[in-house]
Every structure is written in C-alpha cells, then in structure tokens.
Image (cartoon, rainbow, N blue to C red; front, top):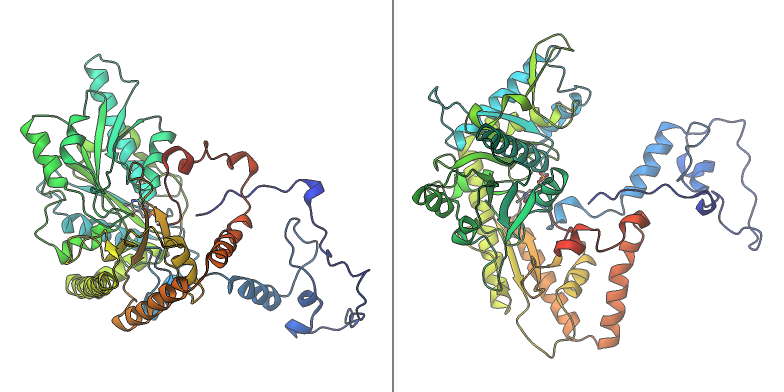
Length: 512
Ligand SMILES: *Cc1c(COP(=O)(O)O)cnc(C)c1O
C-alpha cells in the first residue's frame, strides 16, 4: 500500500553528507568541476547521497538521475514473482509501445482525442455485454472507466446512496442513517467508501468454516435504511465466489426492494470464461451495478477499472456532470478529472487481441496451474481454504496443519520464500476467525506450470529449513522479517492502531 509520507521536521533532516568522514580518513575526490563527464559511476553523484528531503538546487544529468533511480528500484520485489497481487505483470510488447506513446494523452480531453473516447465506449459496451447487461431500450446499461475497482466502488456506493435518499425524500421519510451490508472479508475500499460517505457498515461476519457472506444473514440485516448489499465475486482472502444468486432470490422471494452491487474486481474476467453458467451478473434482477479491475484479470497494467450500471435509473442524473470546458459537451462521473489514456487503450487491445477464446484459454490454463498447486500443497499436508476447478479465483489459500509442537508459523514460511525472491503473503483471516493465519498464492497469466514447479521446490525447501531450525533462530528471523516495515515513513499521527483500519477491523493491507 502507498503510505502517506510525513514531512520531516527540520531537526530531523539528515544532512546530505551524513557519513562521518572526520573520524575516518578518506581520499580526496577527483576535481572534475570544469570538465563534462558522462561517466555515471565516476561522477560526484555516485559518491553522494541521493537528495531526500529538500529539492536539490542544481540539475543532474538525465542519465545519472535515471540510473540512480533504476538502481534504487532494483531493491523492490520482482512483479512477476509477486504472488501477493492480482495485478497484471505481463503485457505484449506490441501494446506496451502504443501505451508508452500515449502517455501524454489526457483521457478527459474528449474533443481532442475523440478516437480514444470511442475505444473507451467500446470497452464499456463489450464488458457490459459480457455481464449480460440489458440492452433492449427500456433498460440500457451505462458505464465508465475508473482508475481501479476502488474508484468504481466509490461511484457505485454514491449511486446507491443517492437513489435511496431520493426515494426516502419522496416518501417524506428520514434519510440520515444509510447502511450498507457486506461480509467481513470485503476489500478495504468498502470500509473506506462507508467512512468517506458516512454510511453505517453492517457486517455479515465470517466464521472458522465460512469465509464468505451468508446470504440469509445478509438479507436478514436489510432494513428501511439499507442502500444495498455488496456481494464479492472472488474474495480477496480465499478467492471464493459469494452466492449472488441466493441473495437475489431471497430478496425476490421476500419482496424486498434492495440493490445488489457485485464487486467483481478479480472474478469479473475469470468467471465468465471458466464458469459461464454461474449466474452472478445482470442476469439476476436485483443486481444494479458491477465493478471490475481492468488491471487484474482484465490483463492490463495498473490502473484501470470499470463500473457498469444496469440502467440510468440506478445512476441519478444529479451525479453525472455535463461539462463543456474543453470544446465538446461531455458527461463525466468520476472522482478525478485528468487521467492518462494509455490503460484504456491497453484494455481495448486485450479485448480485441484475445477475444473470448483468448481470455478463456488463459483463464483455463491458470485455473489448471492453480489446481495443480493446490493438490501438491495438500499432499504436503497443507490445509486448503480456497476452491478448485474454477469454483473460485485461480489462487491457492491455505494454512499449516494444526501442530502444537511446531515452532514456526505461516509468516516464517513467507519470510523464507522471500529469500528466494518469491513474494507469498502471510496474513490473518477476516475478523471473527480466531485470527487464523494463512498463506495465499495468486496465479496470474505469466505464471506457467514450469514456474509452479520451481515455487513448489522452494516451498518444500523452506519447510525443511524451518523444521531443522532451533527456536532462537526462528525468533531472530521474525525480528528480521519485521524490520523492513519500520523503514516506511508513516506519519506518527496515523500509527495509532485504534485509528487505522487494521486496528478497527483486523483487516490486513498486505494483499491486493
Ligand atoms: C482488488 C480488489 C479491490 C480494489 O480494487 P483496485 O482495482 O485495486 O482499486 C476491491 N475489491 C476486491 C474484491 C478486490 O480484489
């Protein structure tokens, strides 16, 4: 996650030359002040600290600045070995080049870039149809691109809240206490949405054996102040699909007017190809809006997402702005104004380059790799928490078998794998699950069977190493493991655990 960086207090500013050279004899620098040199590591910059707190007074040659930044970033993890995330780490070079050429295009300049807008609208059309949106005139779906699912969810929650408020106002009823229902395994953006928009969060808590929403419990929580129920197509924790149809049918049976929003951030580009018969989308009458992350299984680099509404009836006119600053009349429903156009272009490329067959073959392959990983891990005694055979996202969520004698936990395994470059997150399950620790491996497009074999080898090795380690060493490992976190620059004001989302709800942020 991105940390809110705090501005250093003056007395904390570390002088650039913080090496204590007065106590260590060193040789004088070569005086090259009058000569131009393109020798990066021979320049004075290579022997100086990089500017950190104050913008430097003078320029730096571009190749030096670029190299220094590249070297610094080389200590980050490798995206393709990062099994913590659903976010795309591979695109074809043909489109990478076009995306790079489009970096300077501002998507909001509709008048100036009408063809980009056209590609955007085609994406909305294709995605809405993939979700069986009604297109028969009376109900005509609408949609927009966003920066990711979080923005799409903010917009969808806003639309649900507005619709509820208008209805309550029209009935002359109180409209000051909206609530929203979801399972405690929602992604953190739902809690953000509720807090930013002052909506009561109503949780259906997970249990030690159920890691998704219970449809009946969810519908039982509905009252006159409920603006909607969120169902997740692909839980961030275990990849399971929540039973949208059961929620829909209960609402219909009981004659309750309540909207369902489906958070299909990850599953929106998996389920339609691997489980086309699964009814979770606009085929269900109570589903009013859906979000999906283009940058997850939509196969585009971060950040692009999509929000689709069943019909204009669910997107109040008051929320959509018509603007003509930039030459053409345009309507806009986004939280921001300017944004890059590259990712929208990238999404259109993936949709037409791969087609349904292409997406189906990729999603089927990674589901098979994920099932293979699941069965191999199970053979090693691991306890699976995720589904297989396409009944959930292509990921393996699992924990160690119960064993009171074992000195190490899932976090130690994650640390051990990290030494080989693999980023496999360990975290605790959503609240009310007895702080169940787990590991999760997300399988993405560029994770082939060969790579799965390498990871399984390293996993076995990690277990063997930990089995043979004594307790003192494991304890030392755990301190080492936490150390890098402390290097992050989080403002002291926000360190209070009671303030943070994690402190309030037990949510883990290390996965996305
Ligand atoms: C990733 C994710 C989000 C947030 O999406 P971004 O595109 O990262 O903003 C929301 N919900 C679920 C279920 C997710 O997996």
